[in-house]
Length: 326
Image (cartoon, rainbow, N blue to C red; front, side, top):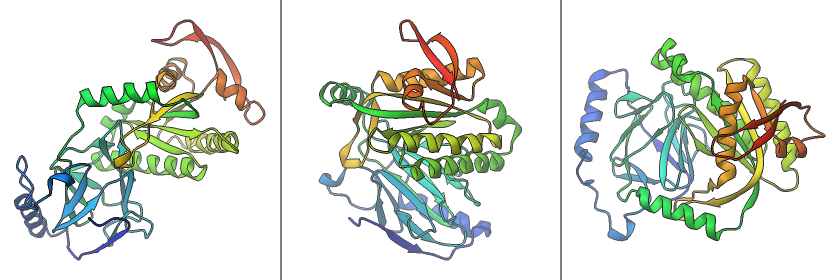
């Protein structure tokens, strides 16, 4: 099994409908939906996930980037592929999610253009530029195993202090009705790409992508608070563009860090994760676009100006909690 950075060269014109249909038919014949893949796979290899095309297999471990840029995990040398075209992220304990990064020509799953993050399932067909891939995940993680794994992780692994940030597009469903498929795909993908660059540029990580947002985090340590403050300032600049309008909830707390190590996954678990998601809902109710928990406000005291919003209840949590806007 090949690992690491890969370069694939090809010359196919998707503007030629007949040629495109021929490619689709060839891919369908190679890996018929609902049936076993043509390529023989040893039993000990039937774990994890990979993309397959024309006899080549590209394992997906952790955050797998796809694009024309030389730093991509899978390099596709085609003018129809953007430098940073798409990513596949492992999240939620063994789930593989595909995200388009605002590419010019789009990313397609089972003949439909991707508008927002989507979970891949075994035998899905993925088209990027002029390359057709089949996604394989022969042994899907069951909900029962996922629950057991999460409970064991929370019980056995020491909690880690982390900054937690949830970003969510305001009124995404009504917004989606006012835009064409291509417009929505570019708007959402470009926003995700911009936020991803800001977070990673400040040494943070996006833990999971959601239908209309994401969860990011920073492990606490030297420089972490300054990195979070810097990211918050840059996010504020992005919010000022209103493309799209989105909210941010920021919290600091202790979380369990688990996931599927064999898949390169690191997922956050625990009540503090639930807390920051509830905060995002509260931000919408209060019409606040940057909401800080009291714990976050205290740590950011010298770096961010905050306005108290008083005490508020959160669903699933007892009592009232102090929050601020910034």
